[in-house]
Length: 305
Picture (cartoon, rainbow, N blue to C red):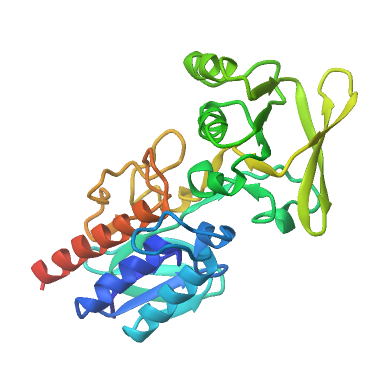
């Protein structure tokens, strides 16, 4: 019987494991793909306190090494579900694994909604980004495009407009769906162009890096090419929390409806990281969630002995 099982090996999940191990708890982290989560898509991380610059992969590798040194167990499996037996939580996987623990931290993360274009995955970190706060500085004085027209895309565009030579918003609908005030702020910027009814159809690269976005008029099909140094894709995030809906309340968008305390409606079950309903999704906030969830779980374990 383990003290804690962490579902997900991103920054939140590994931080939860670190804090629990350092509190003398036995911990297993179950990850379906690779450790590090979304941060591994960032070739340069320059906004993490105390570190001038590192790659997301370097950060993930260091954190994984750290939790292994602290005694954490890891399993590469896909979690199918978690059942609550009161003092015992049972985690089952698609590979047939069945693991028991007294507490569970759900750090399932999110997926960026992708455009679904050939070569897109290969260009992530080589011209395709998802976060202006994280990567905007790499495009100072350069030309970028933003895919999307909702609040997230417009907010990304505003941040980029402060740094970039030009920002072109590409929205496939007849109008932007984001707040009118955001649209007005962007329309007042000389270096921002909003193109509606513009459907992205392809990506052009040179020497392994993005150099242009190919598009067509959604009404007429007329082709167009937008030369750019970067493309910020802001067409939504996809949480993968439905399998845990019986344990933790979900909001209308599928995120865990938990506050900064990372608690769920099930005693002994916690959530942490981007999978939780929040307004800021950054490396620092994911790590904060992991620490908060782990310490809450340790308190629960100590009190219930």
